[in-house]
Image 1 (tube, rainbow, N blue to C red):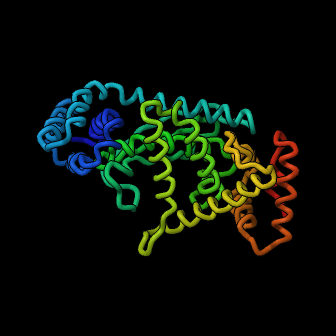
Image 2 (cartoon, helix red, strand yellow):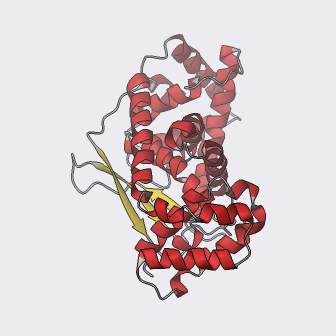
Image 3 (tube, rainbow, N blue to C red):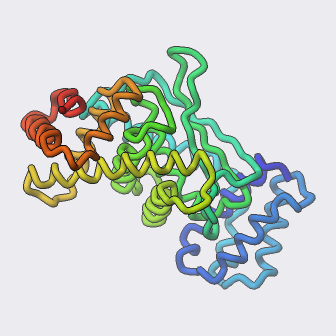
Length: 334
């Protein structure tokens, strides 16, 4: 069985199990064991492999609700690409509308590309059915070419939580990177950390439109994955040790500014888009250099410089007086 066929079979299974997964936790290990063994199956035909997989799950003693759900997996297989296209188009449309309303949208076109690999990509110990998909925006081959959002699936980990995390991954790439003014870099605390918080908040608001089949599972899967890529531990290999520290610095700066904006507006309301989201979209379009983004996050996180923090608060107040104007002054506060 080839990865390109296995991931589609596992995606069909994951989609069919969206409703039963949260309420049948005893069967998670059984499903995970079958997902992990995909490369051992001799079948090189997706339909035959799917029948083999369903047969093995039926004989493994799963609960009745899972048995009932297995009847519909075959029908889901032909809709996998359709589901992905639907998620992508919904996320793209919502992101473009949000940028056009509060900042600007400079991208002529965005395409979706799909791939699969055999080995895990994340260094973390995966929970059942988790960490089975990653996303990126590859460099454009030439100026003016459409931006690409690439989803790469890992068949052995592609369970319902991974499938439900696709909307968050799409939101991250579209909101953080496709329309950003500066160059993409894993060393960018603003793009990877600050904007990821914004992407997660918008994803949670949009989940019902992007992933109508199980929006609650999409929200929980997105939150868990967003937290996973911040976690560090002794022995975490590079580049993850460095990139996750970068993300954490950006997230901390965004949280601080979010709290200050709430204080300045004297509200705890959870409006969407919030002041943080609107400001962040403008900042993402106003900062053209990696050095400028790194410096901005460093200054926000420098709590010891009271004069500088006061300067930032002044600029935030001025921005709140007219949120339609450019956010350059906030970006360059001293």
